[in-house]
Image (cartoon, rainbow, N blue to C red):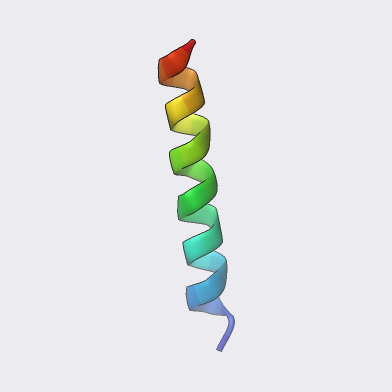
Length: 24
């Protein structure tokens, strides 16, 4: 019941980190 939520949070975190990395 919490796997989808965890996956969504992880994906969002990776997207934010990737965006910051591209910004650098």
